[in-house]
Image (cartoon, rainbow over all chains, first blue to last red; front, side, top):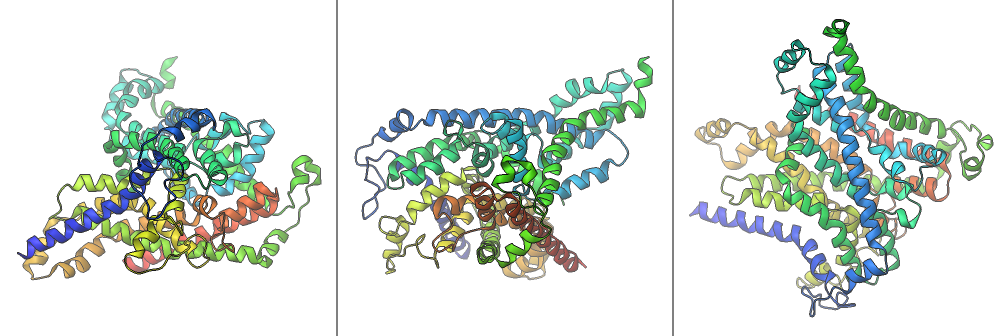
Length: 273
Length: 299
C-alpha cells in the first residue's frame, strides 16, 4: 500500500517534470504554425486555429534564413571535422606515446580550462582582423581548432586500448603514422562519434564568438541572426518561433538519433576524478 | 636506415608530430591571446589604436583603477554573483533531485524520462531565450496566465528590476539541469547496492540512508559539478543579451556584457581586457575555494 502510494507520487512528479521540460518546446512548434497575431491573445492558445506555413515562407523568401542555415552548417561541419583530427592525434599521443614531461604537460593543459574563453576574444579578434579573417569561415573556426576537453576525452578512451596491440604493430615494422591511421583510428571510432556530436552541437549553438567575428549580415550564423531578428521583430511571436524551430530542430534531431553516443561523452567527462 | 627510427626515439618524435597541430593551435589561439589580453589590460587600446598602433600607450593599472571607480562594473559584478550564487546552487539541487527521480528503484521508463529531461541541454540558448521571453510576457505570457489560477496578479517579469534576474535564473536552470543530472545519475549508479542493503539491515530509513550513504558517496561528483556549473554561470551573456539587453535599470547586466560592450561596441579594448581579467580572477578564486572546501571536507 505504501509502496503504491510512493510509486504514484514518484510518477506524478516525473510526469510533472516532463511537462515543464517539454512545454516551451511544444509551444514553440505549435506557435510557429499560428497565423500572425494569434500568439498575442489572452488567454494564451496552444493549438493554431488554421495551421499556416507563412512564417517559414517569409523567413526563407524575405529574411534570408537559408543563408544563415548554410553558414551554421558550414561552420559546424568544418569545426567538427578539423578538430576531430587535431584532437584525436593529440589525445592519442598523450595516452600512448611516451615522451619526457608528458603527464605534467597534460595536467597543465587541463588546468588551463579555468581560463574563460572570453579572455582570449579581444586579442583574437584583433589577430583575425589583421589577417583579414573577420567575416570569414576561417575566422569563426579558429578558436575551435583544438579543444582541451576533446583531447581529454580521446585520451581517456585511448588508455583502454592494450599496449600489446601497439607493440605487435611496431614489431611488424609499422611506422607510428601508419599505426595511428590503420590501427588506432578505427578503434577510436565510438569516441570520435561522441566527440563529433559534442563539437557539432556546441558549435551550432555557439553565440558570443560568432557575434563578434561575423559583422556582415550575410555571414551570420543562426543564433546571431535570430538574436538580431528578435530585436526587429519582437512583436511577431509566430515568426520568431518559426526561426527558433529552424535553429533548434537540427541539433535536437541529431541528439535524438545519436543520444547513446552523446551521453557516453558526458559519462567519461564527468566521472574522471 | 629505417632501423634508426625504431624504439623510444621514434615514439618520442611521433608524439611531437601528433601533438604539433593541437599544441600549435592552443599556443597561437589561446595562450598568446591570453597573454596579449593581459598586456592589453595595461594599455589604453581604443578605437584610435585600432587604426594606428603607434597611438598605443601603457597606462599601468589605470584601467583597473577606473573599473573600481565605475558603478556599472560593481553593478555587473553584483548581478553576476547573484546569478552564480543563487542560480548555481539551485541548478545543482534541481539536477540532483531529477537524478534521484529518474534513478529511483520504483521509477518506470527511466531512460525515456532521462532523455526528455536532457533535451533542453542540446537546444540553442539564443532560441530558448527568445521562446522564454514570450513566456514571460506580462499580458499574453503563459506564466502569468498559469499564475492567475492561483490568484497572483500579472507580473512584468522581464520589465521589473526585481524580477528580471530571477526570471533569467529559472530559464538558465531549465536549460542546463539535464547535464548535471546525467553526471549525478552516473555517480548514483557507482554506489554499491550492498551499502544500502547493509543500512536497511541495520534498520536505517530512506532519509537516513540518503544522508549517510548517498550524500557522502556523491561528494567527489558534486565537487566536479559545482565547479563546472560555477564556471559556466559566471559567463552569463546570451540570456540577458536576448531577453533584456541587460535591463531594466541594468538589473541583468553581466560582467561578460560589460566586456562585450566596452570592447566590441565602444572599442575600448584595453578597458575591456581588464574586465575580462577580473572575470578570470573571480573564476580562479571560486575554483580554488571549491577545491579547498573539498580538501578540508575530505580530511
